[in-house]
View: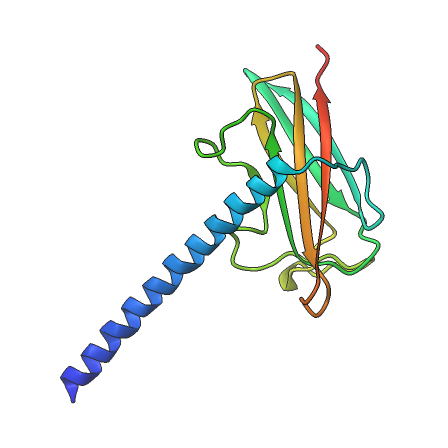
Length: 164
């Protein structure tokens, strides 16, 4: 009986490790899929009807840090994912700015409601570093409806110009 329990525990541990590995590979697959979708997209917006989006860039040591902000939702948005890529960067070598892809929990935004413990945030921010004063960022934001049955996504392009 002891041997049976030990074997059962070992199988449970191995299965648990395999689930973690699977969830990481699923997230990595989603990450690279989102990069490809964003690279191949040809239509971009400057603003959204569903939330505010903005960006800023600042000088740091030998480069520039950019921030992309998403806030002030006008609709309920669940399981939000954001990815930001810079034109001309090989993302097999460098990690793209992202949120909601690799985290265990999800980010949700509902107008005029915030409860960080339950994953309801007022806004989200993604940042990255570039060595170019003038560059172009592509942004994809996806979210789902309350029932998690309909996924929406929007694409944005921002031309950063630090203007030294």
